[in-house]
Amino acid sequence: MTSQTIVPKRMLGKSGIALSIVGLGTVKFGRVTGVKYPGVSSIPTDAEAGALLDAAERLEINLIDTAPAYGDSEERLGRLLQGRTHPWFIVTKAGEAWDGSSSSFDFSESAVSGSIDRSLDRLRVAELGCVLLHSDGHAEVEPEAFRGAIRALARAKTSGRVRAIGASVKSFEGAIRAFEWADVLMIELGGTPAMELVSERAAQLGIGILLKKTLASGHLDAIGPSPIVNAMTRAFRVPGVCSAIVGTTNIAHLRENCEAAVQATDEVAKGLSGERAGTEKGA
Image (tube, rainbow, N blue to C red):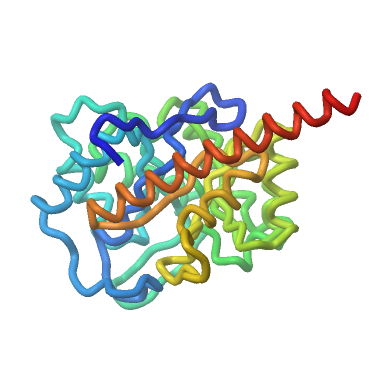
């Protein structure tokens, strides 16, 4: 990818927000223990993290993903983003906390409200782009488990502290429940038809879809000549998908992932054009 290449943007559901099709995940900015990524042994220095943000800005990535559960990620971003004029859209989360060795979950109204306040302080912003409930995979399938959390999110949105609200879910059932209130869902497609149906239905409802683990947390099956392009193509072929979050601290890897995403979306667009042409010819 050349320095002139621009990562295109897509609309986040009906929010009116345009996000780059690749978002920068920053779990590696804040913790190296308890992660599923291979080869993660040290947290980048401020200089290294700053250089990665510089590269992302040159690629015109405007989506950045963090969470309180990502160790010191929010605090570091709060420092590193100061003075930058690039229009970053920050997605963070609430409901999960990390104590350095294990996670704990609290989806009560007070806990989620307090988490939003702390994220605003740590990130040094007056408004968060999006706050997602960081589901443990269990609470999301209980009818009342998120009731207090949803009230806290809705209040933060009404007060102007958050632009969009939603959930990072792990199950089909959890995603369907979130259709009732969420602006945004973060899901893992994982090749499962059920989650593809979630994205398609979300597109019909105007709910934005962000993808996690598109590259299988660095464990992508390398069968075939272009595994990253293939993974991105599978992802962006699904209706409703806005952006894929990729977590890296390596500038070359970030560029490679962006190049694959651009190629994938181009191929998907050509495929759709070909399908339309074939339909019109056969009509």
